[in-house]
Length: 289
Image (cartoon, rainbow, N blue to C red):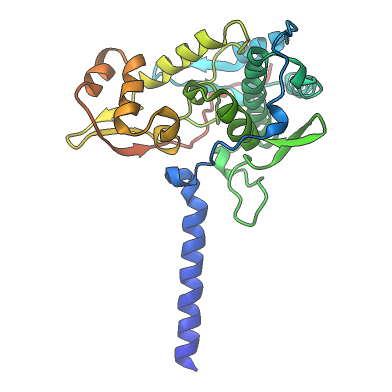
């Protein structure tokens, strides 16, 4: 009987350890990154459409609260966002979700999904602020939920949509554009920066280049060791989006690398490690305005 009880205790601990490892995997390894799995519902578009979407309010909002830092990280002043501005953000999101997005061309759609993703991320942080990290928001379905990414946040065209839907079922499979990873923001210090302006159809390609250069050359994103390179976990989680292996990823990085970063990359052929800081990209100080 005693041996049986001991075995049951061991099994419970083993089971708990396995479940904990499974929960933590999304934060530490590429194996957990969702696949790019097209949601056909959102593949529809109108190639000849010339209708545009006004993202002017979002640009004003970003310009008011995004604070570029000397360390290359753009932080967001969550604590200074007034109640009126919070309400304005919800109205902006509601306006986007009310649009018949399938009636727009691909360029307008791309900017739409990028801006909606970033607006939803800021909105969910503001709804739960203060919070130390987005991973502390256990909003996704499931007993061991981490973060808000699987929560259905909005309804668009009668379909409930989550952040993971936008990233992995719409943006990645439809556009197959690796620079997309530099455009969407997860409110963490190691995330690519929120820009101080909205994405638009006309400026999207240029802003993607700016975001890629900004991230790859940011201090701490890429470092060189004797054995090879240590890079942001984004390049591990989504390695397949940047090429077929380490050499193609390094070639991609060299496209945007300058100065010391380019020097670190030259002659390198292996990625040997990755890192990520999930602390909130918070720049808040003072009172709301």
